[in-house]
Length: 395
Image (cartoon, rainbow, N blue to C red; front, side):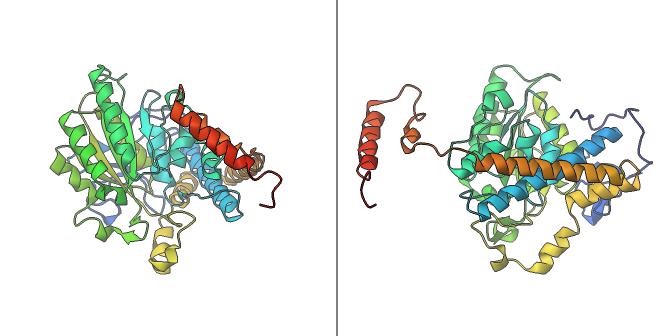
């Protein structure tokens, strides 16, 4: 789905009603939050970041509807994966519930040549990059290591080690810069996703240093969902996370992570700056993890119901739906059609997961090294003998 550029006014399609222009100081009552769509679904014409940058979007009605469709489909597929895990069909699942706008907005802001480095929760970005949603489920079912080609989709493999992908992204971005692939509209940019808890990791801070001093074309995208597993944000930092960028020598901005329009605008601006050779930046997408950290977590042990209810009032899908209804961009038949598509795709996803064949245990040795190794061959032989020892026994 093509998207318009922030900061560029066009006349494509029927325009929504005129909106008020706001600064970050008035948007949503938070002086540090870039917001273009309020929780009530009211459209804001533009908002300003802490450095005076003006953020705006100008989409056609079809593009607005497309963003809503993305949000609904991503949430439904994620819910299906959670249900599959609860029924014993996946070993684990890291839900993105509540973070759809941050992921869809930033994912749709990527150009085809840009490279993304995810954690293990960026299912929405994966969807926006055109990757079959079955792919991460194979990983969490334990039948493969994730089946997509990072070079084809410009989306790296999921990273389980907290924060490690920021160093991978920094090295990749340094290579892009050294290869002379920056400096114009067709330049390449890189984005690295991580959570608020990862900002306490040494890897992330080292990535900040290297990206800054080597002017890497990299956008650090922090989804601040308020909890590093069970540790609240105040246990991670004494200042807003986006302000940390200043100490490393590059700009930072906080965006309403439940606002898909603002997430798109801020990310597209940062990526365009990177591709033009203006170096790294940090985006703090201020959002909330509505569910558990993973399906092995019980969030009721460390947060209260009233807090969750307060964030439910800021739901990214509900606000986008309210906007479409108020501006008469979509009607009941459209919402029903999207819901039916989401239901059908989730059923299809379930059927495909259940049909996945179980891999042979020795296949774990197949793709460790491109040309094999004597040590690995010996391990394969020993493991095969171990498996054969159970044949015909009572074990």
